[in-house]
Image (cartoon, rainbow, N blue to C red; front, side):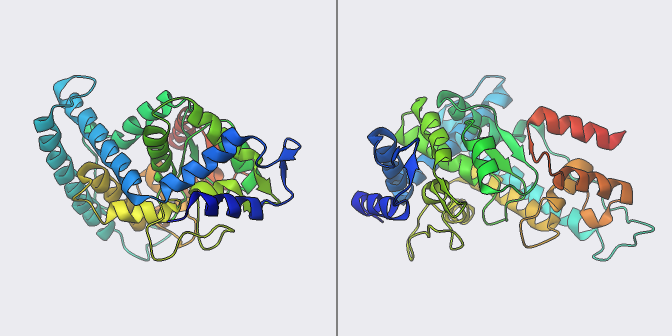
Amino acid sequence: MPTADEIRKELTDKFKGFTVNGKPIDYDKKYFEAYVEIQLFLSDPKRVLEACAALDRDMTAILAGRYDNKENNNSVSDIKTYGEKARKYFEERKKAFKEFFDSIPKNPSAENPPKPKPYPEGDSHFSGLLDAALATEEKKAGFDQVLQVWGALESQPFLDGLVRRKHPFKDYGAKPDHGAYAHRIQWYAISKKLFDSKPPVAEVYASIADWNVKDEIILWDALSDRAENTTFSPVEKAHDFRCPNDLNIYLLTNIDDFPVLGSFLSLRQFKRMGSLTSLALDWQGAAALKLFKNLFRCLSPKQKSKVEELIYNEKKVIYSEEEFLEFAKSCKA
């Protein structure tokens, strides 16, 4: 786990000579020190996992509330009961999706696309549990609405279109080990445990957009998107949740500790793996499943063209939920 001085040195060394609004990077101590504190927090597994446990409880309370027709239900006995119920439900959903994916041939005929088993429809009590829990915290923290990413984004459009405008986001093309929710979970934890659920966290989030040197040295990577292919690598031989893959994989492999959150993410990953058309960033498979409840290779030519219209649109790859629903409607016309 890095020290505060090591983090400060890494930032000042990497961004040497760089200025924000014409001033040296450490001029604004308020934000510079916040960046240090965020990294200290995310590189401390105990503190982050405490926040993830809180997120798991939030999801369970929302589920219990849905069954009891309340906003949420924080009863200790109900939390345990509904936690077990949710875990069982998500495991059954995985089995249903396995049967669905197994019913689709690997090399279908383009002229006569196969008809797989019916798409496994879900129980509305469990729908959007993670989104609901995250959105409650995001609202307290001063974030704007959640947006969806349906195509490749260069660094600056990503920073300007999402981060600077305080939008949390779901990246449907993220690789399975990363997951569409990893960054929202990171910032839930930061807000809940580091900022006490208060608005300054969204201001700090937005300020990150100013730190981009030629699309090569990017503060977003240092704080919450560390990977071997970026300027900022995660700590070796230790859990470093500044790396979204590390956090997502930990939650997936420790479901006993996070029964609702972990099993929800496990189902998401299973669906993602089953719909992939590529091992690289892949919006194609996710779009086919979300728009047509089918695999891309089994779509009709017309359906494939709608998927490609969505993900290869040079002018628009960021959608609000309402905009995506409008596009989905156009697919049924």
